[in-house]
Image (cartoon, rainbow, N blue to C red):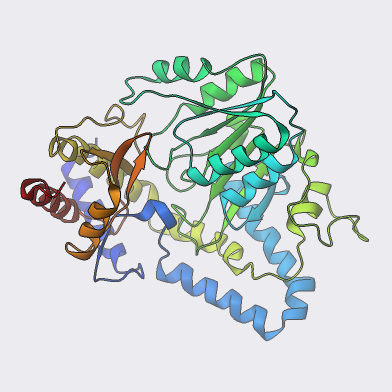
Length: 398
């Protein structure tokens, strides 16, 4: 816990940072988790890269751009704990996982073990490729509310069988907004000889990440969420022992390259012809912004807001948090169960009447409102959300 003085100092810092974000002041933005939000200094860096590209596109694409791309990867590798040449930059984690799923040598009867809390687009990705091969995508049920890490691990491995070929798991889930014990799952998977594939879309800039320590075979994360880069900036990490096993989603100049690069992995997935990858080049500026603004403290304060308010938000509807209200399970997002069958009217009401931008969705038959806290979110914003939900509840709208 922080002292009162420390809390005041961090609150002041967050209030100063709020004006650096480009978000419209018409709404209270409580949905950082979906697409992120980019501060002005990082966005200006983005625009400078776009300007450099347009001033001399030939030199940029053939020469300088590649140098800057490597610099961005070096900065990212240092930030997340891996070799820069074990990374390729992608527009989003869905693209990254498509690279992996497309190339797995799945056979009829093979199984990919996941949970019933994974991101919808990636559920669709795995179902597509598993159906095509006659394999199975196992969405193992993780009971809600979750009470302990041990309970999760026991429930997850009930889905394992002799047909399991790989595990696919979120480190922080998108919809139930819960930190899963991925390190323990990866360790056990290694003992079983399974390929480990981790969706870390919500992790970089949110909770500490050290890929060397985690030792997942495959990891994808977004930089445009909690690392604050412009949209369309993510990465795919593959360990050296598996990275040459995956075909490109787009076959381009990197295939059978006339001048091969450092590895087939980089040639296949990084060399794609003409595309504006200016967002990738902002990674060093984003990391600098985080360091210059003591982001560990800013993030810690945002997490304190979740811990302080999650139970109260659930109490409005007489529901339970989806997990223990502790740092072990919660970061800067939480999902509040609400007693309705249809998320669309509630989402529309919060947006149109109360001017709150916040996601409302259904997961496994339950509707949730998901709150994100970031430097631009204050306790007053959360109090306003509480008052709005109480008014909606008391009006009988739900």
